[in-house]
Length: 130
Image (tube, rainbow, N blue to C red; front, side):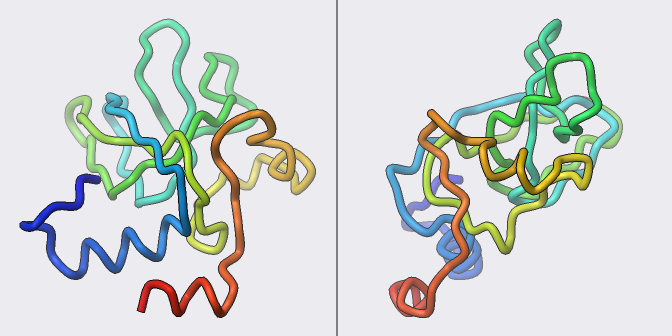
């Protein structure tokens, strides 16, 4: 998500709620067709194609490893779709969507050694964006 002078206040509010701090790192990606994902859905990369899809722990194509979160809702009904993913930053855990196939223990260590942290916002963090 690019925030610039033409960004709407709704986009900024959504961004501010999703990312609690930085450094914020995004990268372009291609969402595999046949998926409609909401913002902050955890995604993994398919090893053979390099495309991303919703991460599911039982997958065997590489996408079981969560690499980040979709920055905005993406609809890839009939074709692959370009998108952006968060690869770093303090992500709002209460808004993140991580498939139920991951246990709490898996989620707790999911981003060890990466620039992503999952955090529940505090009241003081909420005030910083209001």
